Amino acid sequence: MTNLFRYTRTGPRLIALFLLPVVVYGFYSIGDRWYQNYVLTHQEEMIRADVRRLREENLRLQKELNEARSDAGIERVAREQLGLVKPGDTAVQIVLPQGAAAAAVQPAVRAPEPAQTMTPPEKPAWLRFLDGLFGR
Image (cartoon, rainbow, N blue to C red; front, side):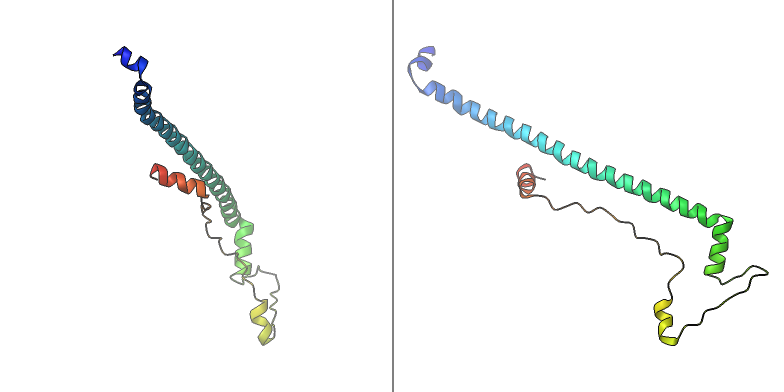
């Protein structure tokens, strides 16, 4: 049998025929792992940015809540929204012309901002190709 591999060219061809699928599978497996790592790292970055944004929003809302619960905040809401005055104060009401009244009136309390969700950017073509190749 060793003479078969030594004197003919079919021996190396048979070895290459059996090794080629192993090598291709190895490259595919390594590429799949790399791609999984890339996708998970990108998702982690997006989630961390979302957590940072939510923490900042939480701190801002806690600050607003503490301010609204303080005596000055309660007094401000009572004066601006309810039109109440302290004893001894003189209430002044400004009367605007009919057409200017709607344009000049602005809400005293700012409406809460809707929660912004981060939308993932569109994937480049090479990532879409890898998604199709690796079945994701």
